[in-house]
Image (cartoon, rainbow, N blue to C red; front, side, top):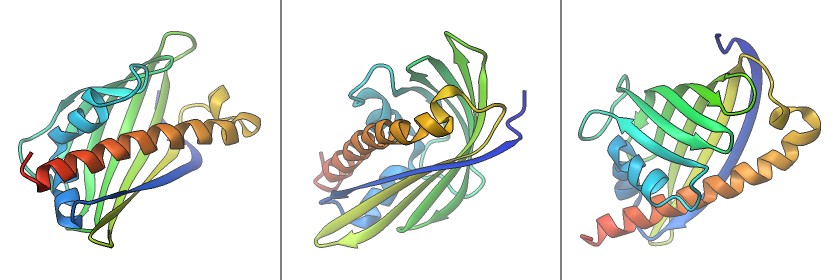
Length: 176
């Protein structure tokens, strides 16, 4: 099934880091780091990155990669491409996701993941926006009555992942 039904559901959260914008950007642009801050350091076994197949080094516009991740109700299998890489400010990934659900039919969605990094004090503010642009169907958690509650859950989970990213960037800036 194709994710061809428009949705436009967006969440956004941010955290601060003691690391400079360049170090934060470099940490994001090295796609293999995502497995560390969004996988190994994840606070939940049911919402984390499980694997990533990506080229070594910093990704640029056009870099394609695949990944898988756990969700509350199954496993994601994603095909992604970097569509914007403006060092040290913005990094955007477009993802075609397929969720094999343990209960319910498979769900296909197209996500846009945007990281904006801005100087703040001696460090950075990292803002992450996630937009579900298209889906093959609208699951219960994105129905109008439930979606505002779901947004709270997603923002909390995303904020934890961003805090992991901030810590990893700080470790890298201090040589750790």
